[in-house]
Length: 394
Image (cartoon, rainbow, N blue to C red):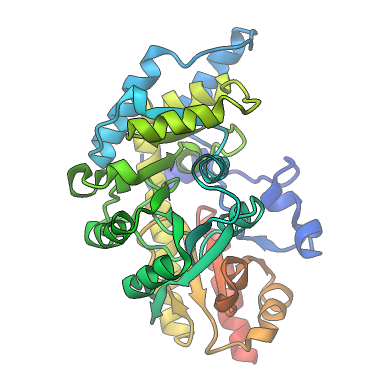
């Protein structure tokens, strides 16, 4: 399917559908007439195979307590092996209602109140909240940033681990909002620090499938053929990949038997919900038949990013467009062209955009904005035109 056909078949107008991204603009931003580029979901219908699987499952008319069918494990394993060269075993997997929930459960299962948990900022804001809301000590290390590119400061990470007696490192891979797909060398370096200092790693890999050409994703548990898998708890889901966020379902992957027993002992005390049968059906269909849909969606996202980057580089060179290796979230450094204290006024009131602001991801990142590119190319072009035009009026 070509890109034009994909957009004709899958692009939807979501206004009036109880959609958080578009219908909550007034409550979030005080203005319902903005171009919405903030919440990280897509303005694309999911794969028709997913829709068909859901319709078939709904037609049964019974939604009682259920298990994941045996076929689920083969389909999920095939996806992980084919796309990410990760050999999965059924006994390594537990279910959760979402990756952030999975982080919260891991924090409670493997640390105690007051223990230090490390995150690398700027990072998705629930990472901050899930630590502090569970009465753990939040330790933050800024990523190194230069001219639109983020990297890890391994010396600062190790220093923070030692000084704070860090017990858990919560990793975002691929990284939101920095847009990095960490290389195997980078992952090995940070995992080696964690191994050396007995730090458990929780790797949120919800964006694992959303990567640009030339930037292959490597699961943390697969680094150096699994050399660090014993200290890694992996979280992933089809939800971000196939736009299924309102069908809560994710995986907790633990290869270490002792850690799995510790997790199971913790989970047995929870009032756990049963699996979501519709989410299971959707996930199976997505992983079995959704590859072509995903490839087309990635092309649209890549085109949107290229237009954003090249146009801003040419017409607003003071904006640094951060490299997008993974996720569909572009991060713009606007500190050279708009005073930080006036950025919201510029972006919202003048450019008419609803975005995520850098300080939401960490206090040192004011002056950045994050834009969701999994949307209509017309919105991206209008957003760029608005930014360029308003900058000329300053």
